[in-house]
Structures are given as C-alpha cells and as structure tokens.
Length: 274
Image 1 (tube, one colour):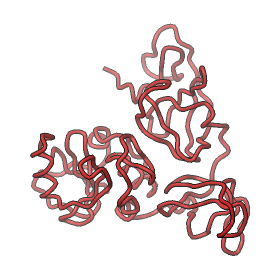
Image 2 (cartoon, rainbow, N blue to C red; image 1 turned 180 degrees about the vertical axis):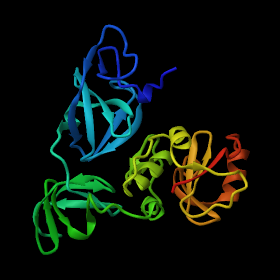
Image 3 (cartoon, rainbow, N blue to C red; image 1 turned 180 degrees about the horizontal axis):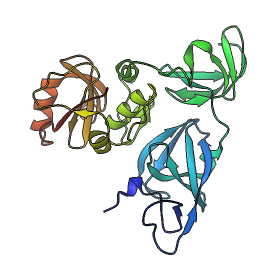
Image 4 (cartoon, rainbow, N blue to C red; image 1 turned 90 degrees about the horizontal axis):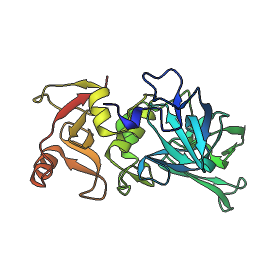
C-alpha cells in the first residue's frame, strides 16, 4: 500500500520517474519554487486538514496548480497542498533565523515599523550588510538573529530548547505552534539533516535503533505510537505534547508512566542520531 504523504501523484498529475504512476494522469517534472509566506499549512487536500507546515524560504517542487491550490513535494519527499499565493518562483535564500523568532524592520530602527515577523528557521536573502542589521528581502533584521545557510547549527537539543513553552499545534512546525514531530524535524533540520516529517516516519527512517535497556543520552529520540520526544540529558525529555498543550520538559520515567496511564501505551523505540 502506498503512503499518501510520500506519493507525488494525485488525480491530475504524477511526478515523472515515480514508480507505478496512476493511469490517465499527466506526468510532470515539476517546477522548483519556494514558500513566500512566513508559515504555510501543508494540507492533505485542497481546503483539507493541515498535515504539516512549511516555513518561509523552503524550497519545494510544484507538481500542479489547480483552483488556487498548489500540489507540491517537499525536500523530505512529503507531498500535499498549499495555497497558490503562498509559493513563488525559486530564487534561493542565503540565511535562516537562528533565534526563536525575529522581526524584519522597515528601516535600521528598532523603534520603527516592522514588515515581517519570522519564526525560527525561516529563510531570507541578505541583500546588504549594515553595522547592526542585515538588509534582507524580509526587511532589516538584527545580524545576531540570522545565520548563513552554510553554517548550520550543531546541537539539535539546543535548537529544540528554543521551542520551550511554544503552544502545541497539531501539524505545527514553527515557534508559533509545534507538535512532537515538528519539534524534532525543525531541531535536526537546523543542524543540516534531512528529517522525515512525522513521528512514525522518524521512527522508521531516521537514526539508529537501540536496545530497550540502553541508557539514554543527550539528543536521543524516544518514541511511542504517534509521539516522540528528545532527551536533554539521561533523565529529562523535551517534547511538544497535548497533555501540557505546549513544549515542555518532563522526566522520562514520569512521562512513560503518564503516557501509559492515559491509554497511549508503552514506549516503543529508542533511537540515536549519529
């Protein structure tokens, strides 16, 4: 059975080169584009439920545009629909937001008007460097808030900790709202890794499985059915969860007991990212 999330085909088009494309659709190589809104919902269908989110500057492959919706494939292979107005031609980006959030100002004036409000890992193009600000295509942004693409972060746990206190949002991928797998994806992507989007995909296709009695260490991922968290140290996990409706620290053993008691089963996997 094919996985809808990873199948670059719908009832109109299919990506050229995919295995077993549906009959009667147009084969296409797609058009490289990028997200131009600060955050864009990636939906399961036009006007459908949010599966995931994409951030400003993310490169995508647009396979079809129909009735105001673009059918796209992301860098992770995940597919879905975004509003046509939320994507445009690919021009690339040079830097990403390396703080929890930032503002783009109309001028080099911290008291001035803002023209954008960007979450962690949103991408921009730097046009000029000033004393305290970069001039970008999203306004003047404090230099300390941006990092060149060729200098990814090195500690996914520190990246994940930028999300502490962020409200829980099903399918969320930003510091405006995040879910469990969104937290993991954003933290490791900021460190230069291509990370599957959902917790089941992360469990099956990311990292190395460890024995159930292995001692956790910083950066390990802990999985339940439909849930994942990242270890801050050998005892404490950081995870975005619906119990707290936020991204919170929780002792691992306490989380195991609570999650099982609420009917969501035992922990099913412990993985390490080399």
